[in-house]
Image (cartoon, rainbow, N blue to C red; front, side, top):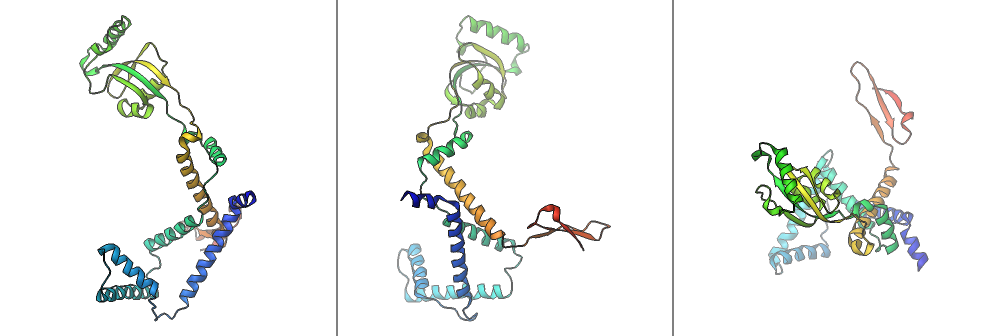
Length: 301
């Protein structure tokens, strides 16, 4: 069983499975494409799908006339679709190209679904991407706000408030009116930044608990700040953030496998990139991306 699990985790196995699935899909499409262009087959499965969709919408089964109308609507869609293809209306249409690309990407994503990762895999991912999961620093603090618009000598007034704070005057009795709270408990840096600005938040979370500090300038004015408690940033244990780590890991793995599948498909194409012809120069540069850039060749435009 362990050998099977190890084999299943090998990217090459996923790569081969995706290749097989694409081959089978291509074969199915080829068989469908071998139908006569003027023959439309509505099989029982398609009729049942039409009926089921009707039931989901109207909470009842369609009558015979309604079902006949649904089938005729399906046939109309198929006729228009085939005629549009025959006329080449799907060519050079960016919206059609984008929808086809998205459908193939969804298919590749479905094929790249993995079994739930083991804890040791998630722990390694957590360590490798610590910055994604590290907690923000938290601080508890109180502040005295001074509005620069109503202080003629702001520097002198700040010094006066600082002296009163050293005498243990109540902070709530000092400073100017503000819609902000005077005291905050265990708030993270982002929350502080939303209220006071990034620069103020960075300075506050770096303060040591104890004495009054400042003046600190915010986007609102000037503050004297006293931090009473500080919890440093930390990397949480896997058990605390397992769901988030697993979600991020699986998303990264799906993207990795999709990229591998794309590179495999791309390897079957010769890609030539021709630059625009320079003014006064009748030569254009053609670059073959299947070879190093240094091997680009010049061709006559």
